[in-house]
Image 1 (cartoon, one colour):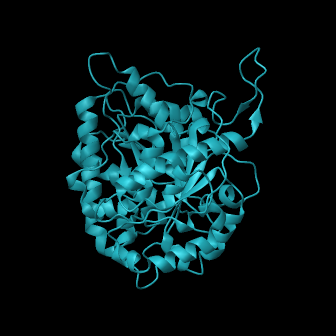
Image 2 (tube, rainbow, N blue to C red):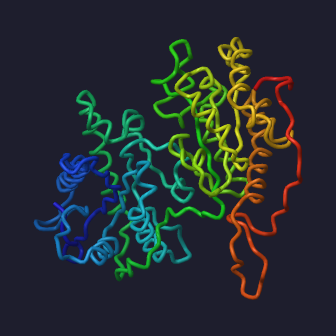
Length: 432
């Protein structure tokens, strides 16, 4: 199906942008076959509902770029002429340099079409390949609508990949593909974004590159519905540790999403992931890369599989990484086991619980409500940032003529933290 752009007046309806899944073994089946299947089915649907002539491809996907073809020039040409950009959202997508370049190239084109009398043309039609938590979406993509009633609830829950893999959801998958194709046609024929001269693709930078100078790590160490101990209420958990929500039903957002919002408002760029995802930065011996916090599910302190991680984290000696223990006052199960949970936490994290000034240490005690968590989190984030400023690597100045060193990533104008002696929080009153 994939091919070059069609004749004038019959440009491809869409460009499918996706993150390639790597093979785990050279002999394994191509892990991107289902993406190719989705692409072909979208093309068939669009052909059925339009009057495209023979030989004009309905869309473009990079699977059929032939050997010897200049890859960058071909991509630049397709992005300069396609009518709609369709990114397949996944966690891998927003970490892909190639996907970020494709997004940036197309976004440049639609901004060039802005003439001061109307908004930027809405010609990006995202689709969930696998569900992505809202807090993991880059700020620049959050304003783009990616849900539609015709796609169905199962689509939002599982994504197109999940619907394809489960036989009983086959009808839901067909409906979602049909709705997505109809939306592509509607946007393409409604907006009619004009083509441009292909840009210099090699000079385009990824739209998803983080501002590393303001990066702030948020690592989640929590149970999932699969790993929780049998008596523990499943409603607080999801398929990933990042889905953990100790404040349910008071607040329906994962606690990592709440934390990311606070971190962002304090001027940092949150990098959210699981404890294992950030394992090297949290437990490794390398130089500090950024400040951070660990959001800790206190129930992990009673689980033998998590205890070695907690002990290693406590012994790692990284004062620029704080610990925050969200603990809802309405969670009766946690309240009934409070003494045992507190004792386990103190035994595993004696250094971390004593780290920082009293205001920062409230993040392990005064968190019984969402509002209390947000209030306690702010000084914890600021303390981590100040500690990183004190321990971060010094780099030569980048301002000509200046001999002042600077610390990465915070600026030299940030005030140095005051020295303080750690206090023992074990005797503090209130819920941890």
